[in-house]
Length: 237
Image (cartoon, rainbow, N blue to C red; front, side):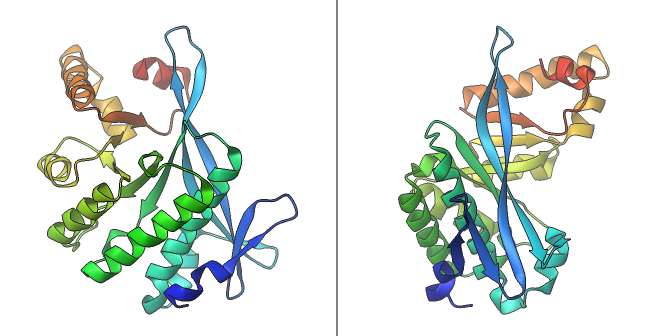
């Protein structure tokens, strides 16, 4: 797959949604809602998390298994194809006030040229979908062995183009503090198990409130995933 042919892999389904074909695989978007709770208890969709669903024939394939099947020299293009798919499908929902959060396999974009190309594809998809760049959030994961300077450069390129940044699995250690400084995110997703452990006593809960307040002062929005019980919901409140 070349960069020039990436949009030729996109097709419209009978219901109007976009999907993509890559080899024997059918790729579809799952847009998982992320809610904000108002003071009166009313829930409002604040963002969607773009998740890829792959299948071969009638058999579903896990995202990890699918990406492992992609040749190394095509992974950046396929990774970008998945984000284009999410952006176009989010545009069909017609909610310009709602953000779209998508994972970025950061290690795929080490060279400045690759970074520029990916930013251009994001801009093109955003224009086609009618979504303002700042509503598109690239969740950058830093994996062992990733070049921290390359990640920071990629984040700078995304910021310059008007896109937003998120970091995930925040636990407040030195590595995460360094990520905050380098990537300058607009969204931070907490590690849920860390959050629960931190809030087991009043001192930890007080410090957690300070951290969240500091984020708010910097216009950083916090996200908590894996909320499955009333107790976790109460903790978030």
